[in-house]
Length: 403
Image (cartoon, rainbow, N blue to C red; front, top):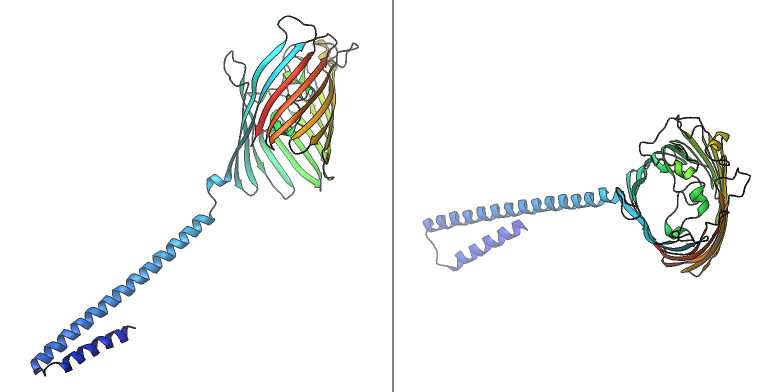
C-alpha cells in the first residue's frame, strides 16, 4: 500500500510536469529535490502511523489482559459472608395459683443475632455468631451480649473435618439449628431448654466425619459446666466461655444417621468428671440424649429424650437432683407452603431422683405462618402443670426471620 501511494504521488507530479511548459535544467533539478523532500516526509509520516498503531495494539492487549485477570481473581468480599436471625415474642400467661404479680405479660425482642463467615481456602473457613439477648444489655439491664460461635473449620480430608474455637455442642435437635423459621412454637421447647440445656456452646476442639454415606460422628473435648454453690440445674452451669473455669474438661460424642431421606436419628453422650471444677466436693455427671426427626411429605414428627445422671453428692444441694430427665413428642402438618400446625407434649424434671412428684408437664398447640421461607409468624397456646400449682397458661405470639 505504501509503494502504491508513492507511485501515485510520483505519477501525478510527472503528469503535471509533462503538461506544463518545458522547464530548464535548473528548474528540473529544483523540482526533483522538492519531490524527494516530499517523499521523505511521507515516508516519515507512514513510519509514525505504523508505530502508533502498534503502540495502540499493545495497550489494548494489556488492558484486555488486566480486565480478564481482575474478573478471574476472587475478591475478598466474595469470600466473606454475612447473615443472621432474630425473633420478637409477646407472652400473655397466667399463673395457676393466681399469685399477685406473678402473671407474665411481656413484649420482648428475645434475640438479635448476626453471623459472619470467611472462606480462607477450599478447605479452611471461619464462622461466628454474635447475639444480643432481650434487646438491651448492661448493668441492671435485662439483656446480654454473647458470642455464641467463633471457630475455624478445617477439612483435613474429603470426609473429615476439625473445628477449633467456640462452637455449639452436637446435642439435641435445636441446639445447633435454632433459627425461628426452622421450628414450631414461639418459645423453644422446655426439655431442650432445661435438661440439655440449649442453647449450649463451649470452647475446645471437635472432630466430625462421615463413617459411611448418611452415617456421621462427632467427637469433642471442650470446657464444661460449672455449678456454683447451691446450684444443681444444668442450665445454671453454662459458663458461655467467659473466663470459664476449666479445671475439669468435658467430652461429647454423637452418632447421627440420615441415610434415609427425611429421617434423622441421633444419640449423644457427654461426660464430665467434676461440675464443681475443683471447688468443693467433686460431682461428676453424664448426659445421654437421643432423638428422631422424621418428615414425610407434609407430615413431620419430632421426639426427644434426655437424661442427666449426676453423682449422689449433688443431693446434698437438693434431694433428687442426681437424676434429671425430660422428653417431648411433637407432630406437625404443613397445610400448603405457608401454614403449618403442631401439637407438643413435653415433660421435664430437674429433681427426678426424688421420691415425690416434681415433674413439669406442658401441652402446646399452635401454628406457624411463613410469609417467606425465612420469615415466619407464630401463635400458640400453652397449658403447663406443676405439682406446686405454679404452672403458666396462656398464649405466645412471635415473629422471626433468618437470612
